[in-house]
Length: 265
Image (cartoon, rainbow, N blue to C red; front, side):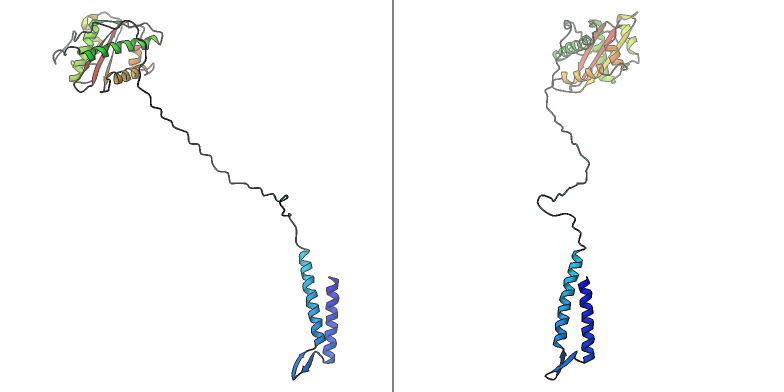
């Protein structure tokens, strides 16, 4: 910096000397040109000034970090993103099985009809399919009781005949406890010869066509037992005041299975 000041002063003094002596411009071949000595001085001064500016500029450069293979550390902070969890869904096909251990001997006396109103005539004879479904349904009812620590229901043929007649009537007059004459189920059961009972109950079901037919019958029956303690089907099926039962099934021409379960104390 001191050198620049000194050179500037020297240039100023020399310029003043040239101007005073009138030798700033000199004629050469009819043309005025700059004094050669003055030109050398100007060139020298410019070189020194440029070098000095570069040195001053370099003094203001702040070295933040040396970029070398060992000292360069680049820390990346990626923007966090919400994690999306997609659960796997695996559907494993399983065969439809209804494995349960029948409780007690299957009923062998399954009447085709019973005592009660028959405005549509008496139902046709029990088919082999209806016979088998009746035995399976009776066995399932007692199985569901057994796994809950309850005694088995006792088969009653009179109740079974009245239940079959009611299933036949429902096929004609609709799915109801009170068709065809409006009497409730306990009055109907009492009229079959059970007057004086202390408790009675009835479950009715309608299962659509399936192959085999037992598949949908089983599904309907298990929906009853799985209703829970507030459902009347569950209350009847797990009762400790009902002891006798009769099951009546009618399968219509379209494969619909109408069934009735009548119970008394």
